[in-house]
Image (tube, rainbow, N blue to C red; front, side):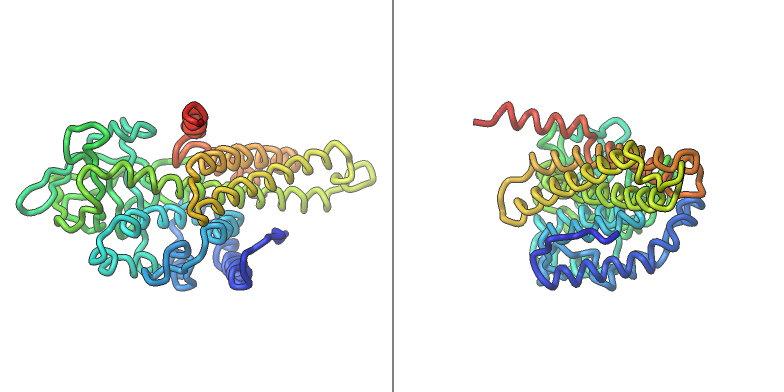
Length: 382
């Protein structure tokens, strides 16, 4: 069912209607087949880019859509309700544009941002390493400055869109100075010496590859450095606050899709002479699911509105990511329960929703990390 949204402008309402129409036409008919076959959705991202959906939260003068974050996140939610993997890939693309848009020079932005935000190019975010996931300051991939540019050596891990992206926002070590020794680069996919591992064999989100990347004596031009040397982690963490909101919105979309399917089934299925939704035990379960979805949506919208107003929102982003992804896991699990044995089969999409929900609690900072962020903020609050 269509979500009853309070949107800031008539333009935003039209944009959400366009998104629903596009998602119903381009995503919903393909998702089951592509996820089962682990087949990348060729053509989907150019279509979304042509509709202006890949650069929505960035300024129009940079080639973006000039939309507030609260609108962009609701677009992600609508995409996530049809195809979570595609919505995650769109969120990661937006995340990968952050460094250049906020920390690039005017010349760098003019050169690369229009194609990135306009949908001609698909991006990926390359921060994690095999031994440095949540502990980003421990990364070891090295960027050595030479007369010819930066020589990159090392291995990165858990890259959404890996091997399919056209550019990678890469974080590598330019000095041994701990957290202050990491820098940010915008690396083109065709860089000599860059190769990718086989896609991870994942529980869910199988149509979008997640890979490792191997940098073997790869050379990046000096103008590929974004910001100053040593500024990488602040850039990365600034982007992750926004990225966590993207995942929260996708998780809410996934939960909404599961709720909608469970309600539709419960209205149609009859036992003991009445619809199963009219049995109090099941009706209460569905009510709790609806309350969880509405509550999760409220948390990401609160954080987004703070971001749009220029107010601090790091804690609220962690709260939204924590609440929304935990809700998605609970709601999709309960949706399987509503369908009973049918929910456990691949004849219905609920089992896929449940598998997809699990990763939402892990990437863009595990939910344990979100609790740590929130607790540290509370400890330092005055």
